Image (tube, rainbow, N blue to C red; front, top):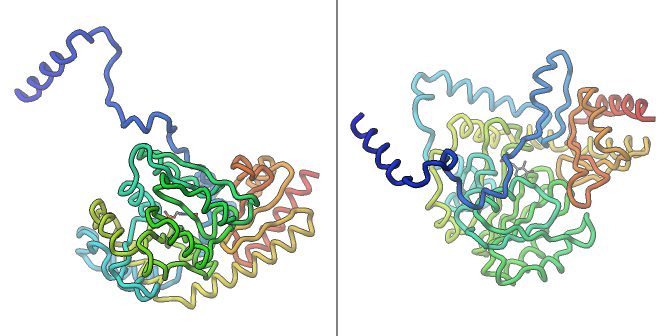
Length: 386
Ligand SMILES: *Cc1c(COP(=O)(O)O)cnc(C)c1O
């Protein structure tokens, strides 16, 4: 009590002549002034409020089927031990990093398991960016990354390729200057599906040794191609991946990054080794133990992609397929189309407000069986729009 009173009188003394001014509130860092609170657009609340409807949640590129049954078995087994939830998780997710090392052909030392890959992206920004630093970002892309850049007071420098659906690496290279601290490449890019191959990336990495490149491979499992082996030969590359898309455990927030030892040393200065939860660690291990299950799922999605392209094409809706688990659909009235589809219980993402995406909506690709039903519901909407 005594202590509190002292504090109060001291701070009043400091304010002194400011007595008439408006009430003082804590101030966040200056860089946050230009940012608005992130308003997540997710269909979850609507889905929960409509328990009788069979929903198709195709707006966030999550898996449309549950994860491998082994995930449930492993979690149940874990929970059957009395002392497991009250203990901290395995520090640094060492077992999972070792398993991921085998999967990626890297050493466990090259892998950092994070609380979703968003956490990896944020860690990189926190460790490498400060006020005024420039980050080159091909647009349109995964917008959440941009917040982490701005939160450091760094500057997003947008890059527009000549063709929306082509990486245009030649011009990208020309856009990189000595001031470019970081380049963020999503491969396959969300939402355009643009990819960056090993050869073209090698050229960028060797031409710009002082620039750090992030390659976000959130959709690697669907694409099947990766640049991850370049981590062994280049010190300026970080590859990020996630368990939220193909592996179907978005709700558990599991991701990881792969990088060389010099970048890893920097990242580990700020990394919190207990930020990844124990249930997530267990689930991710179980995912990795069941590659057959996930191969089948990816094949199913790949067939559904072609099915949707053909069926929607026949209905006058051109589809741009991507190497990932989403397609772009060209529609005349994107907002209305999404709204009417929502009334049918199909939730997709209007992307028409992104630069150069005026015509497009984005839809996650479900399984073939599910795609048949989705097309039936789209038919109802087309009837209403006619
Ligand atoms: C979905 C997505 C992520 C987010 O992954 P989490 O692991 O769930 O944080 C990251 N990058 C891209 C490009 C994505 O589409």
